[in-house]
Image 1 (cartoon, rainbow, N blue to C red):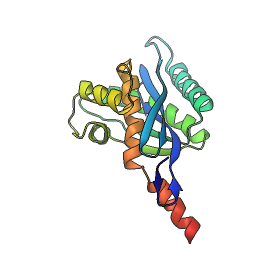
Image 2 (tube, one colour; image 1 turned 90 degrees about the vertical axis):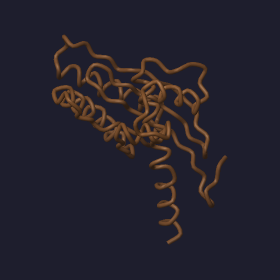
Image 3 (cartoon, helix red, strand yellow; image 1 turned 120 degrees about the vertical axis):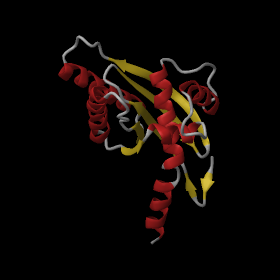
Length: 179
C-alpha cells in the first residue's frame, strides 16, 4: 500500500466518456500510486430509438455499473463544442443522464476537459486518440487496447481523476480529522 503521511489511498474510480450514441465507461482501482483496470464497456443507443429512451438506457446502464463495482468517485469528460453544436447538445444530454446516476449513488464527481484528460494520461493536451489508447494500455498494464475507443477514453477519464483529484480529497479529510 502507498501512504501519504498517515493516509492510505485506496479507492474505486468510475470513468465516463459521454455520448448519445456511445457512452464509454471504465472502472479502475487505485491503491496508492498503483492502478488496476477492473472493467470497461460501452452503453450504445441506436439513432432510431426515442431520445428519452436513449437517455433512460444510459442512466440505467451506468447505474448498473455503479451498483456492481461500487465506485466512490467518478471522472467524467466535459462537453467540447467544436464545430458541431448539435452533437454537443446530444452529448450534453447523455452526460446529464450519466451524472444523475452518479449523483443518486452519492459519488464525488471530477469533471475534466478532453485536454486535461490527454495531458494527465499522455503528458500532452493535444495528444492523438491512438496515443491516449496506448498510454491507457500501458498505465493499466493491459494485454490489449480497450475497445471500443469510448471505453478507452472512459478509462483515461478515471486515470485523470487520480492525477487531478489524486490526494486532494484524502488530504482534506486528514486536515479535518486533525483539526
